[in-house]
Amino acid sequence: MKGKYDVVVIGAGVAGLATAALASHAGKKVLVFEKESGTGGSCLTIERAGFKFDLGLSSIPGYSGGVVRDFLGKIRADLTLIPIEPIDHLIFPEITLEIPSDIDQLITLLSNNFPEESNNLRRFFKVLLEIRNELASEVNRRELIGMYKGFTFEQMLTSFFNDLWLKRILGGQWHLVGLPPGQVSALAMCNILGEPLRFGLGLPAGGIGSFASSILKSFKDSGGQIRFDSEVTEIITEDGRAVGVRTDSGEEVSAPVVVSCIDARKTFFNLVKEKIHSNYLDKLKELKVSKPVFQMHLGLTPDANMREVKNGIYLFEESNTWVRISSPTKWDNSLAPPKHHVIKATVPILDEEPIADWDGWKDLMAQRTLQSLQGLIPNLKDNIVTTFVETPSENETRTGNSSGAAFGWALTPDQYGDERLSQVTPIKNLYLAGHWSAPGAGLADVIRSARAVAKFIVS
Ligand SMILES: Cc1cc2nc3c(=O)[nH]c(=O)nc-3n(C[C@H](O)[C@H](O)[C@H](O)COP(=O)(O)OP(=O)(O)OC[C@H]3O[C@@H](n4cnc5c(N)ncnc54)[C@H](O)[C@@H]3O)c2cc1C
Image (cartoon, rainbow, N blue to C red):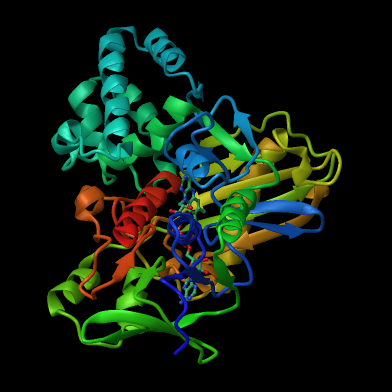
């Protein structure tokens, strides 16, 4: 086995890149293996017919600061962010609400509509931001985390508010975490809402892929190495300790530390061949996987009528469908040929039924999503230049995430924070980072997981 590395990282999504960059900047010799031909995983920009489409998420939580910006500063990554204002819209049949990044403005807006809840609104957002601060802190501060860790977001809302409509509005951004308020962890919601409400939201110029590329550049500048088109097929172990990896080309690379930033079930059921304690394997079998999404991306001509399009979460009552719709060319016109538009529609898939006929399902979902978009863009059909669609099954093939899970393990109260799989595993010197490990999913959380692993490696 070749043996010139201190650390081998599996997967070049944000978690793998962040772990690799932090370890490399701390002086470790790091090699990353990525099965695809580029970086990013769930944070990828592809190009079709001159349009750039963001597969996965599109924006960075924290324009002016926060976990992600602090991390980029630490590794001296060079990234241009475009501020997004307002940060979101909720477009329900009965009401359209603009969500500004300024939390005081948001409280005033909501208090004007729900005057009897105005004190509760102040108390709620104070607690939400304090939870965000406790979660983001590198020091162990956990008073409110301890208080709310068993709560769903709905339970948390009910502990503050009486008005059903207000609770419905405050829970409306559940799309960002993939589970409705009655199921999702209150802490996960406070994390995902708190970061942009404290520091704004930023769009990486040139698409979300520039975010991953900026981490990659910083990693390489500090001496790190990456191998693309190299799938890790085995984590080599000796007496319960990770000692290296084997790839699909048969190459073996030894290293005293291996970090897996891919699906945890695949890590332990496919890559680790050594027998490990059955309690751990049983737990892996029991954990619930997060729900996938259906994604449709359209490149549109300059004539498309975009007047009614707001970036936000739409509830289409007639089909009872929730769709997140955004047009990133509103902020960054480099994502399309001159004066053209990009539209992205993401539909969460909450069904429990397994899908047997993916091709038929894909056609049906594409048809329904186009119908929803047609309601907003009346001349849509005559102005489509190109379309790109990704099903959960295609997402699994691309990212390796089981069933196309968008957030690793489901973000329920019993699977968030310390309740999620730890970075430390039963195999010595094999660590986990990313959305299949603690503390959660989304950029801020996977960077926190990378920070935690880097601490182990460096010490
Ligand atoms: C459609 C969608 C929308 C989202 N929206 C938001 C949002 O609005 N806000 C938010 O914060 N989060 C959002 N997320 C979640 C967020 O994108 C993820 O939690 C995060 O990017 C996960 O990063 P990761 O590095 O853990 O995993 P991934 O991004 O899945 O990366 C895993 C990488 O490992 C590679 N790999 C897999 N197996 C192997 C192997 N055997 N050998 C080598 N390489 C391998 C894959 O190719 C991939 O590059 C969204 C996700 C999706 C899919």
